[in-house]
Image (tube, rainbow, N blue to C red; front, side, top):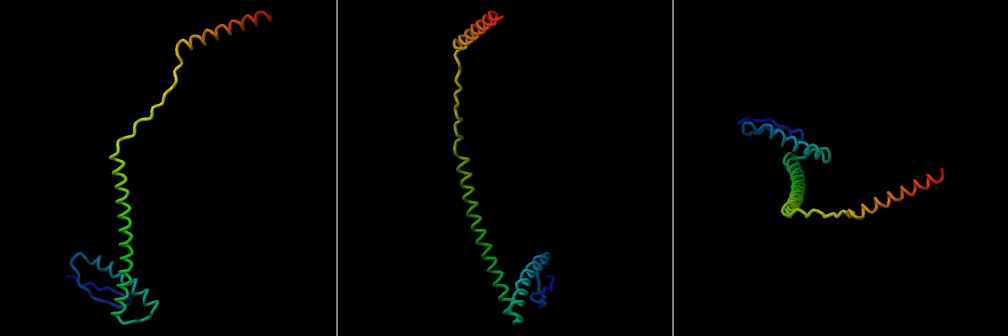
Length: 130
């Protein structure tokens, strides 16, 4: 079992840990040292036990805040998943029907006949004005 030296609040501690967990111990010690250093800057020198207690409480407070945020995020995620599930289980909406008017063939033929007559009249008018 490896012995690891960590520094918290300017004090050195020797701590044992499992093989391969040294990185996690150093990371946790760095967080605790950050809080302890912050305390030392604000309050000054204090007994080791009090410093560790206060730093631990500060970290616990931050952790509780993060856990609250995770719970809120989980709640939002659950709501979003429920909405997606409701959406996916609903039948697809019916396609919108759009009716396009169609001009009957006899109307088209009549309009073509009127156009032809109008052109013939225009030709007669042009021929008479020359």
